[in-house]
Image (cartoon, rainbow, N blue to C red):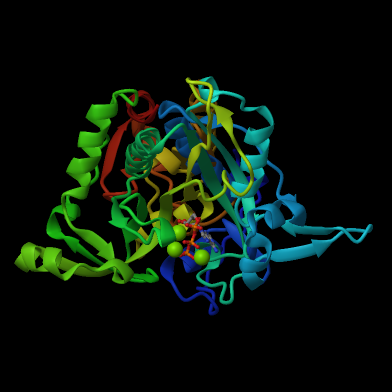
Length: 437
Ligand code: ATP
Ligand code: MG
Ligand code: MG
Ligand code: MG
């Protein structure tokens, strides 16, 4: 993409109304614009990153055996009356009336809808286990929308729902998601810590919030220092029930809890290895048994012919919130430092002198070659000062930057800069191509 033809409205000044760094940088780098309280338009660059994040989430859901579908944003109040949640949900739900005076709502979550969809088709134990997911916009009328897309009113969520024949099956489905979540966040360069979370009336240990440490996070968290190791991907066999259980047991051995679930015995055991910090909830997984299947009358025939009520769980990831969490974790004084996996473009070309024929030719040529190689490249071909171009490339966080100037081109070299380290190396155009492609 040529910057001269792009829509990339960057801001020079830090917006006064943004309190946290990720919100400031998202506005400055032209990723988002607010259109109403807690509601944002995703500008071209922001949309690219959002799609990258969603795609990583999708790939890891698929790998864990979940099946993608797409449910609507607008739901009927009737559904929620069946589960008894319509009145209970409260003012966070955006209620809508259609022209026939029917009560509708903009979905804050989809347990009711998926339960009825599954109920209409599942007949026997052979239809179990299944985990279905979608990546869809949600609306929650938050009392205090803030920090930009971190706590928006409209936001993008991946929500998955599992159906199993019994609690043991549900635990396996839960474990699949547990490991899939850690891999998902690790691929984005994030260390997300699974923390015991409230299970409500069901009890048990099957509810975890995945928290990314950040000083501006809204949750107060306590954890063992072992969690400070960088995240690593684990290759696992998701069908291996026992193997998966032991992996999850390994992860949960080190203490980690939000302030609502603090456990003083474990904290005493952690001793001087206990850490306290703040964090951002980027995901939440939950087993809730028959909470929806029973009142909504979801039943299937078991292997012995008797009716069984499936056990369910739900699993959310804040796809749009993750963008804020990634920026909180990865930025410097000059702007965003995108991890390669979610960067809007992998390579930025800076032509220092658009009026110089040799520079323009070299830059055009490199741009064409990178495009032909399938590399996502953004090309600053604007008639601007070099300093402004450097600042923009750093602000928008492009991982590899290739600078083309008259002196270098005369010697047949360009400068390749790595955004994350600031390291700059001069090399031939061919070597630069090989390095970044
Ligand atoms: P929070 O505690 O931040 O209000 P939640 O516990 O209400 O979140 P869940 O119902 O667990 O949220 O939804 C799953 C995920 O959706 C959360 O872990 C979070 O990443 C994301 N999420 C929830 N509310 C918002 C919001 N208002 N804006 C952006 N993302 C959100
Ligand atoms: Mg909430
Ligand atoms: Mg929460
Ligand atoms: Mg939650």
